[in-house]
Image 1: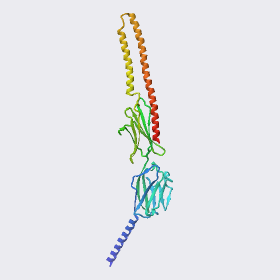
Image 2: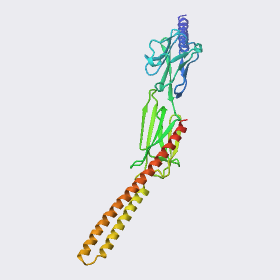
Image 3: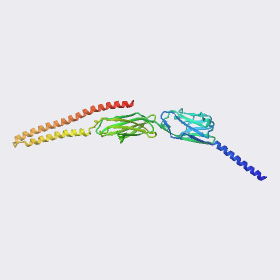
Image 4: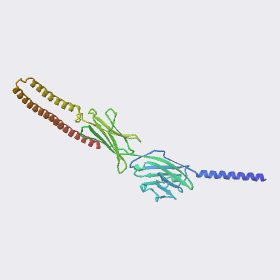
Length: 333
């Protein structure tokens, strides 16, 4: 009889333990949500959803969205209502919790006017009594621009400097110059700054010393989504600097011809001088005068060549600036 009572007692304990385990298991849950990364275009509305599994009523639970610290929520729901006392200042009046399906354990966080500060991780946190679970979603903010401007500076002794400008990118894009065959042309420099919206403003320069490189393209692309934007420009074929081989050859040729002519004339005159000292003195004086005259003519010729060159270059620069201005205006449109 005692053995039967002991057996019944043991069976009762086992039954109670099983019942307790089943009850505890029914109270437990997991949190599921969007698998990142979630792309969020700049200035749009972002919605992040999370769901209890198995589905169950979450109206009595604490629901909290936060970035890195639990004690710094970006939205908080507790005791059946939204709480705003602990919200991070930059998210005040920028978030909304959609609770249409909270009876099945689903809520959606809505973030207005997405900006680069919203890039990163988001924790969706559910707490029921002492038990809690969370789901983490990765958000990537993106912004791109199709407005690319190419500026060509006046030629210098070092070459022609070409600049590429573009604003409003996030994350920071890659930049490169390409020629007409699509091959990369090394840039002279690359730099960036950030505006009041924390978007990237890009600048890239190129030093052209080869007049054969006429068609160049400025390319920018967002490595996160593969978005690429580009603008091309065709430089005039006769855009050259003072270092141009044609100009240098022209100056050297002119100086050489005048110098050789002067030397040839001097040698001829010396060979025709008579033995008479008086005649020699007269010829020497005449030769000195002619040498001075020819030297002045040589200087005048060189100055004339330089003047003609700079006049022609000035006209070409005006035409180039006008064409570039019209091209940039059409690109901005």
